[in-house]
Image (cartoon, rainbow, N blue to C red; front, side, top):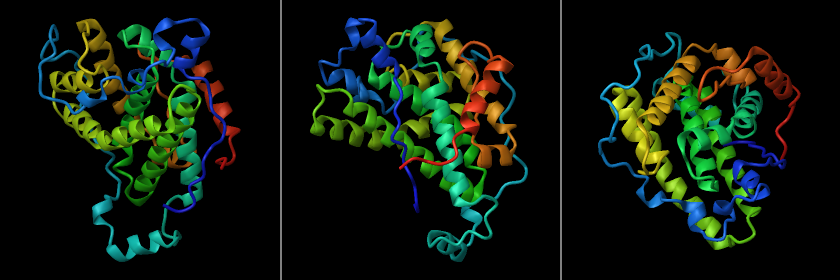
Length: 286
């Protein structure tokens, strides 16, 4: 991947909020607070106790009619793109990088991670912050798969930003050594494809299958109430449907993903303020 830049600015995450407010569960004294139960994140097909077979009914997800599948692109054209040729692209690489950066800022800065932690009963740890970000990144990836070369490049930049942001935030945890940090990131990178695979399977199946994927990955097989699972399943299907209807130009050029809240939608004024702040971002910091 050519010319991917990185941001140096970091923001305060939910785990740091917990430290400032004196939450005893998030002092990061043990590496387990980093990894959580990541060894269990490869989902097994287990039922979710207390949940119905069809929790939330949403409209069927349908791809855009006008898209270019990556596997349909000729090998010669892929080689040209690999060496920097981009005249035949709908959006330049530089624009895609900036749009991916804005999308990541939307996830890391403008998603209420505290709402997910409180409403879903998740532990207030760094690992939870990462799993929430991972879920939102996957929702964006379900849309990018229909955008050919541009979508693939956007995806690569977005995932790269996620890993670099995770590493940057972990460096702020003084009790975690370099080797512990590297082992954690390597383990999560290894398990990311499994997480995406089972999220995809759940999305394409019924709500019971999606609940199973969320229970294994986001909740890490911990106890969860049926109403909590209902909220997150409805949120996922609603956001996937929202991105499915999103204009390709707005996605690839602007990178503004109007994620709603776990419960309900954002107010128009709030979205306008977020959009204005992202519009002021004119380059991807190194």
